[in-house]
Image (cartoon, rainbow, N blue to C red):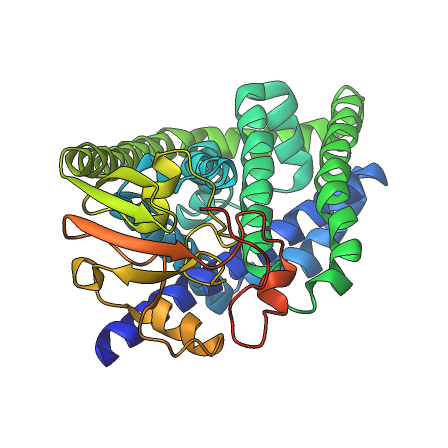
Length: 376
């Protein structure tokens, strides 16, 4: 049990750390683009202090290590899901965006970093703007979509993690405006910088010549970079398809293994073995509190097992940690998102109203059980 707990804690820490590193990188990138509203030259001047840490060897190891681990663990998380009912709208949006980000940004990464690996020069924003607005506008659109997708994906992940913290109500009013304003300013900066680059490119000085020379150097490297891009997209598509196929296979298989869940008051629902109690309720359209979307963090999905404890999976690392934090020492209290139905029958009572708010997590009742009435 201790090894399982430590392994689960390591996975959560690696995924969270990777997400924070990537969010820091995207924030710096968007901040840099926002200064395109000032001038194209300002973009390049600020690129050095804002992005230079990521271009050092330690920064590259940290950034691409975070990207690889976050992407890999995300695909494993997809493959490990057991039911479509485990996805709420926010989870589905975050999952879809996460799967699309590598597709959107693959060419940009190779365009900027791959060219350097092959002996090229670091592309300036002047060259990038001409490339995205004049030479290959389709890849410019992909770059914009990728940055927006990465920002929204990161914000959804951070919101799901931070909203349960006691200090979240204090900082939320300051973070919400930033979350909305920064990508908008970055997109406006991208447009304004593109307009300036096109205007200067049409001029008569030597600036267009310098840009053309840089684009010609990249054109020499482009065929090899395109091969790398195609191999990456093929490998990524194969891995993503395999993860989604495993997800769908498990969802279909579990629906064939029937069982029953009896809620306090006598209401019975048909259930599929191999699903969590939370997934079963959601699958049947029954409201059930779960502020952390079934990740075992908040404890709002907790239930008292009235009968059939032997038909549930034993508590895992995340569940044990959360129950201990909430001082729930009763042996018959389980987290519905973590308790997997393995046998034919279980009887439960939900302990938190389905309408529970975030405050239930930040300041739970002294005994860990909500005092509000529960509808079963």
